[in-house]
Length: 159
Image (tube, rainbow, N blue to C red; front, side, top):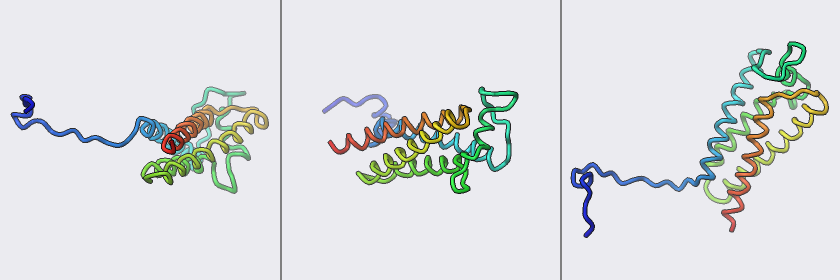
């Protein structure tokens, strides 16, 4: 019989609760939460008409973020892209609670859609607006990371 530790003899030992959450899923969770917080901020900015976004790329006294956020490309069918990002991050987080292949596939599908839309918006920033919004770049980088991580999570489960 194995020797008991002092903690176990004193009744202080509690069995550790092991979770099935992988490091990959935790990384997806953290990145999606940061993206969600950023998109909440940008949605708030949009709906409250705050034009002075803290941004490093000021041109002629105007924030490049404010110029991007008020451009024709800041809405899709009348819906602010910040709100679409918020919906995307919430959906990715929700897919983490769906077990099995369906949850992994849904997470990858949403992240891939977000990546594609972010790539399109980044193209518009660079080549059409000729302005770079650091908040938008941050979101695009997070969506890129989420696409890679959700793809790895999906493919690993299938092997």
